Length: 169
Image (cartoon, rainbow, N blue to C red):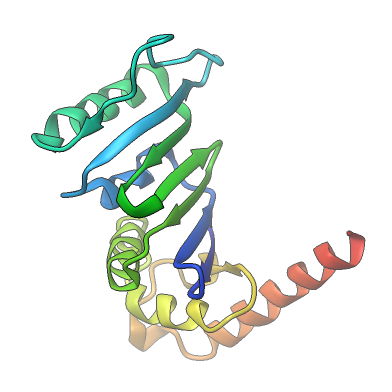
């Protein structure tokens, strides 16, 4: 898994996650599903149907999303939140913008912990200070006490990939 944090724009990006990685960001929040596609390139929303906002009983829509993913494997989804915030997920890549930076960190650390990144707060704080995405798989399963010099190795590898990508472009 890779994680990037853009604190200036209150944006995170994760690579190598599944569609249900969106759940921590939906919890207790009004949202509007704009687009949703299944793994067989099938539109999972009704054509021409108005895209409504979920403003109460969020659990009903969230439960429906989980069921859709169980049956159809969601490959792509775009969701709007209030204030121009939102998220997009497509084939393992998740991007989220939340104008409330504290909430963005809270939701992201919950996501990280769900994937076995138990030093989630420390990972967030470290990645938040970097200028590029970090290969956080280096610290999978580690508690804070286990991190040692691993964060610096992670930074070095992330910077190598970043520099190579920008060299090619």
